[in-house]
Length: 116
Image (cartoon, rainbow, N blue to C red):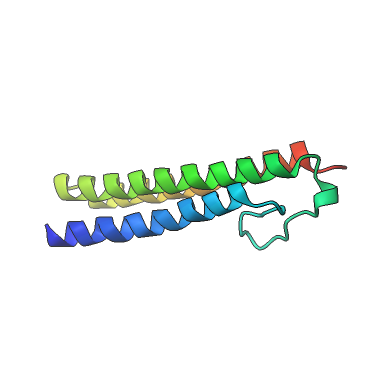
């Protein structure tokens, strides 16, 4: 039981990083990025800086919450069921799906808010 509590606390702290980063981006006045290694666009390249920041911030806040739910469900199912390999594969797919969702949201915003 202690290892489960430690795992959940660590999962919460990792997820909290994304939530705090999302709140920071939501409140930022300068254009932000998703920390993917690309530079954020300049203010004059965007049609609406606040919408850009708010949508990126919301995406990271949602990602942090869903990540914690995914990590919590993973530990629950590992303890309850025997098919560990299948669960690890599903866990990996869920995590990659969440990351893909973030990237898709970012690309949608790039198409919508960056001036051509």
